[in-house]
Image (cartoon, rainbow, N blue to C red; front, side, top):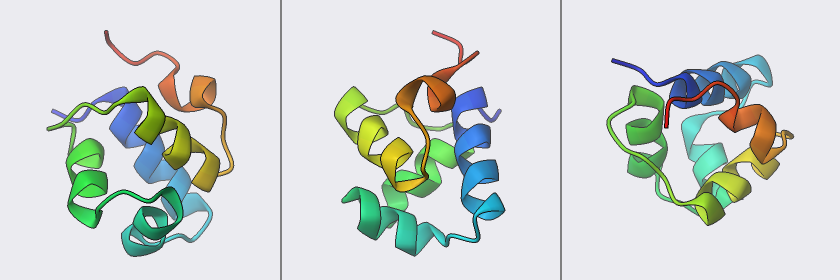
Length: 69
């Protein structure tokens, strides 16, 4: 089951035409890490989520909203 966080991340990435590889490079995390978050199979550390949100042109609050705890 996909998490709200992963779904929002993937939706935003596609909306701005960014590949998984580009997001990984810009946020300084691995490609497999991005795929895992988008699939909802992995959580993330706040520092990594902050870098991902910045790379997507979002705030951490926008990325995190309505995500289950």
